[in-house]
Each structure stands twice: as C-alpha cells, then as structure tokens.
Length: 267
Length: 98
Length: 201
Figure 1 (cartoon, rainbow over the protein chains, first blue to last red):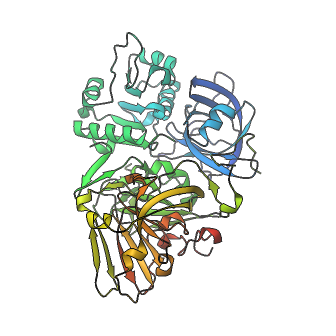
Figure 2: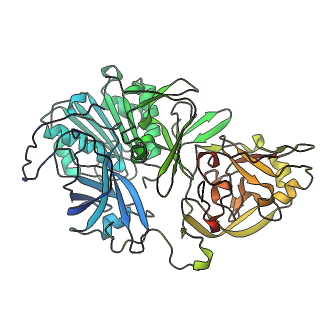
Figure 3: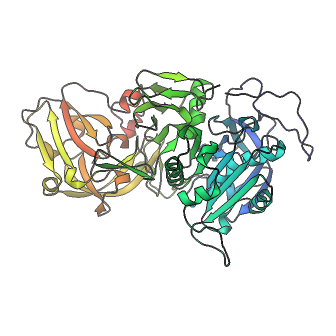
C-alpha cells in the first residue's frame, strides 16, 4: 500500500486545512454528502468542481472518487471521476461533458455552487504517484485523461519536488485542452517538459505535432527506456491501448507502465 | 496492434475494455481494502499483474480478466443489498514489491 | 438520506407506456454495449453453427447454409438486467423452431455457447414456439460485432444476458447447467416481469 502517514495538517495559502498522503487508518468507503464550493469552467465542455467535504480522508494523486446523483423519484446513477487536485489542495474533480452521457451533462451544466452531492473515496491505489515513488516521470494523457496526471504534477509542485517529469497531452483541438495556462507555466520549469499534440484541428501557426501519439513522438519526448521512467497513461481505451503498445515496442518495461482506461468515449 | 489483437484467426476488439482501476470502488466494498495494488498470478499463463491492471468488462455484472491472456479472474454480481464476488479458479496473490 | 439533485432525471425516457416497462426497469434511446470480454470479429468463412449434446444426430450450418434458412423480421422490446429496456427493436433471423425442427432429443434444457467462451442456459420450452431466434440483422443492417454480430441469440421475453452474443452452438442437455452469469449469482430463468435478476429473486 505504501501508506504514508504525516502528523499535523499544514495550512494551504487560502487558509483551508490540507491533508497529506493516506489517512493513518483506512476508513471504510462510505457515501457521504459534500457541498459544491466553486465551479470553474475549464473548456467549453469541461468544468472543475471544487468541493467542501469535511469528511474527506485525503487522497493520493491519481486516485478517483465516485459521485452519486439521486433524482426526485429515487432513481440513482453513479460514476467514477478522477481527482484533479493535489492532496495538498481542496478536493476538486474535473468533469468533461459526454454528449450522450447521463451524469456528466448534469454535473457540467445543471450543478450550482452550494449544491450537495453524494461522494465516496478516495478510490484506487494502483494508478497513484507520490513524490517518494521517484521518477523520472513520463505522463501520457488522451483528452481528459490529463485529470489524474495534473494531480500528480500539482502534488510535485506543492511538495517542492524536482523529479524530472515529461508530459504529453493528445487533444482533439486547442479548445479542448484542459488547464492550458497551467501547462504553459509548468513547461517553463527546467525539469518539466510539456508537449501537446493536436489530432483533429490546429490553430493557425501551430508548429507542434498534429497526429496521434506514435513511437517517433515518444522517442523525441523521452526519456529513453534505459532511464526506466515511471509511466502513467490515461485516456480513452483506444488511446491507452495504442500508446501502451507503442511504449512496450520501444522497450519500456511493462511493469513500469501504469494505465487507466476511460472506455470507448470516456463516458 | 492497438485496439485489436489477433488470436486463433479471430480479431479481438478491446474498445469496450476498462481496467481494474475502474471498479476499485466495487472491489473495496467487498474486501474493505484497496485491491488494485494486489498482484494476481494467472493460473492459465503464469503472468503476475496488479488487479488494477486487469481488464474489466461490464456485462450483466462485472468481469475481470488477466491482461496477458484474458483468462477469467473475477465475476462480480452487484446485488441490490450487497455485492457477490466469485474469484475464478485457484488464486495466488501477492503484495506489491517493497 | 441522499440529497436530491434538482433537475437530474438520468437518461430515462418519460414518453413511454408504463405497462410496457417491467418492474425496476427504465427505457433508453441508445443501445448500451455490454459484454463479458473482448469483442470477437469472427470471419464469416470460419463461422459455423452447431447443435449437439443429447441429440440423435448433431446438426451444423455454415454461414451460407444458415443464411439460406427461412428468416423472419420482427419487432420486440428488450430488457437488460442492468435495468435498461429498449423498445421496438427490429431484428432479422432464424427461429429456433426452424433450427430444432429436424433434431430428435429427450433433453429439456440447452446451453448456448459462443466465441469468447460465454455460455448461458435455457429451458427448451423458453426457446421454442416462436420465443427465440438466432438473429443476424438489426434494423435491416448486418448485426455489428459489438452487438453480437455476426449472429446472436435473441430471447426477448427473458433478461438480455440470455440473448447470448457471438453464438456458435447449442448443446442440448437433460439437466439444467448454469451458464456464465447464472453460476455467478444471476437468476437461472431471468423473467423481467417477475424481476428474476439474482438467485433467490
């Protein structure tokens, strides 16, 4: 489990209490109510939901939370969403709207600040990264697969950690790219490389890659397989399958590759 | 390559596969612990893989399969008042390396 | 008490005749894809259908022979145990009455087996007298692999896991042998109108 216990709860700049690492004793998963503190429009189709959740036991970067909605007649639907916030920050989920989806249209369009949601988590320990896990880090995102990976980069920044990190984001167009300003800022750090590929539409003057992730792109980004990077791949199933195959073909160690699949459309 | 692999003259499309991470909550309901980091040794092909890296499929219930050979590992029936998990075959699991 | 999400209705349709909706089900527009494993794309020249088990003489058909059998096009409602129902689905295929016409047996049950290893069990009386088909077209188009193509079983009066995708054979048996989901806790019969989802329902 690698459960990391820290004493004391340092305050974050905005004065809220942050909890670091895993809780001392594992709490049973249970549904509870959290309140929407803030909604942030990330792109035309994606919103970040910042939650006030006094019962949240803390999380590791890369974990997810289950959200459950209840209609007036008692009908319930639940979905799992990646946590976007670092463990050091207030809990936040980024939700991309799936057009024919059931839960994401509600969360991105109907939900208001002050509303209550049912939540349980954090969930999953396989797709997580803590600064103590080391690197170098190779992070590969397809679309909103960036969400758990940004949590890892935010964790790294919050800890003042200088692990070498390379991030490749495959996005349909620049307007679908999550956290664009933050990615630009991250890319200016000497030990962080950020590469974007725009697979469908490119803005005028775009000189970056404009194709699906392939071996050449991965080789250019590095690090070489010999550096044994810790790899995290997250996105739609097609993206993950394709990218993981390319990594293994290049000689990356399968046991260093962690993958998380969203399904055919990321619903 | 990519989304489909050819085994025995048939192409197998993995477009609808998820992974063990996707059902971590369901597994934790049953085991009261995070199971995604536990590593299972496949009785069919001998590969050791984290439960989080197993392939997950949603049918009537949920199915986990070995990521190397797709042999059955777990069937989960989410019942209204509880979940029933069937661990298929003889199970060997280990902790992640320390 | 779970908080109510104002304005949340899910993907359910409200414009439906409640008498057509089995208990605990809701009606969808789309056609969800569910399966217990990866989707096989079996080449038609490798496809065959077999009837065996407790029969005096096994029967089998190639794809061409199967296509030459008399087919029916019909419209039915389907009900999945994961609680979605879909109305007015149109299928084309061969009735099991046609396939079993020349088969002599004392069996009362059958196990349906499929590419990918999936199985499900049924009573013979649930698949005869116009209650079941092996279908190869949906809405007039060849059945997509994700929905069970080239051919799937269709038993619309039972939960949809009984309508096995990628069907390749029927094994007739004297005893009832639980299939893939039935062995794992799903109801042996699976009548949606009696809400027979799980053991003990």
